[in-house]
Image 1 (cartoon, rainbow, N blue to C red):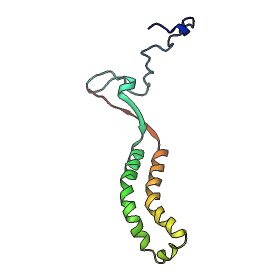
Image 2: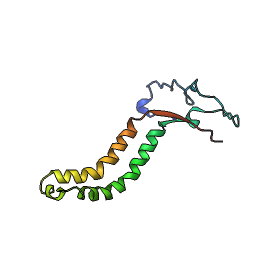
Image 3: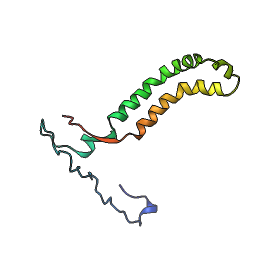
Image 4: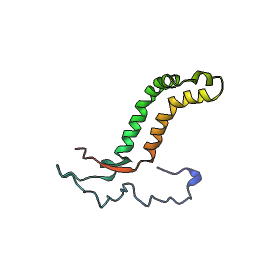
Length: 123
């Protein structure tokens, strides 16, 4: 590809890492599959993400949103004197808090859980 006339005298610097630069494989993981013997590659077989507890909490937060949305007003209506508080601001905060705070709390916990590496043989 020929550079434009404006950039004809500008020196071109090639990428120093190379076009096919790969990160080093971690030393604490096996370099090949123990079942089939296929050699692992960094960008293909290993991934980083939340650990098992983080994934469980995130899934629970997703699926607990609709039950909390339905059961939140029902549970808060069972509290005696709740409807008297709707005229002020406290009752509405309690109603909306019972719908949205439990899933948000679980999602926040899933974010602070430790991360882990996942090694998968895709053969």
